[in-house]
Length: 285
Length: 257
Image (cartoon, rainbow over all chains, first blue to last red; front, side, top):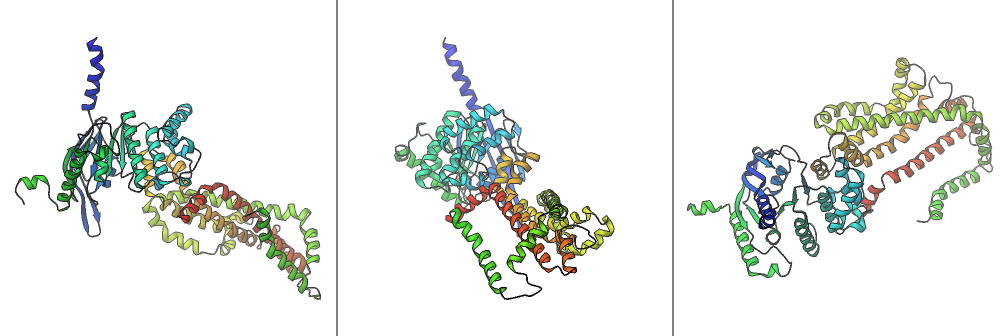
């Protein structure tokens, strides 16, 4: 009896320990007219299955470059990305991406329904199942009422909801989000943050969320990876030990939230000056 | 705008012009300028009857076949060239050269190579109509939004699916513009292709009237050409509005921001 109860819990814990995504020694050097530019120097980190991690860093830290490499859209100069044990060489089937530019990421010639449906149609999912998944996903983001409208008839926040629904309907194991709320107003942003937390809870999907907003990273994540400025390395990994149940007002006004936020802020200030903790420790200062 | 208002705008200037024509030719008995009433009767006499089936219909069919061929070739080649930077760079100078050649100059050459037949006339039309479609398609494929392309890749849309689900709709505003330009070029070339070594067709008939000093008949042919142009443009506008509804909606939203 005791076994019966504890087994699923144990396997869930084991699952949480399993490494889903592994980024190892990733470097990216772009060729430019004025010579090679090193956008990302040496990035190494792991993501566990079911985890919610945020990447923050100063602007120009190569966050988008890193995300594109993980998504298989860009090839690293050196290093390797491994997803579920397989090296990433192109966009993996079990991954979905939500881009910052929602207006350019939704297909303007398709309705909301058509946009969410397209990846499933392309993957030859049977019609009934497609319809069910599209409806469920649109309901999950609160956009079921707008299924027949075109993306450009919707506000920015609503468009991003549709983009999230498209990712959800695709049933990915990992969801990458590239500063998805950078272009929406503050209130919409708060709503969308709660929506993403909610979807993460309900679906158990692994989320890697890139942002330049420190508050957002602390509010959303279980772990925050702080990047240095370019050429980029991981400056610090901060575990967010806030309670799992988060609330825009209550969570943001706790002392712990303020501490974590200040700590990350300081790290980013150090990063901007080109200092990493190892250097400080080694007495380079 | 209401339908009545739109119709009023559409017919206002033509009505004024016809009125002026009527007023200015009241006391004229010029051999070269027929009066409106005379034109109406000549028009009916000349074009409503066997001449419609013998001359007008074959001309229009050649025009449509020519336009369709140019559209298929232009979009097809445009996709291939537009998708590859190497091909674009390689073909650009040559395409500019070919585009600069006025198609009427090809008529005698094509007559020698292909013979005096329908194929020759269709080829003349294709040789002029393909350029705006091809060049616009290349531009449309080239300038496709990067984020849209990345989105398709992320969701595993590639190969032929990518062409159908992404490239074709994304480039459609461009090649539709090309087809609209090709429409008027096609009409001109339809007439020109029938002016040499031909024994039927709208162009041939008008030239035959000119040579036999059948002045009102000649004018009626020219008016018919104009009417065909307007009609084709109107049909195309209706189709375009349906196909590119999303595009005009999007533009409207972008401009209002």
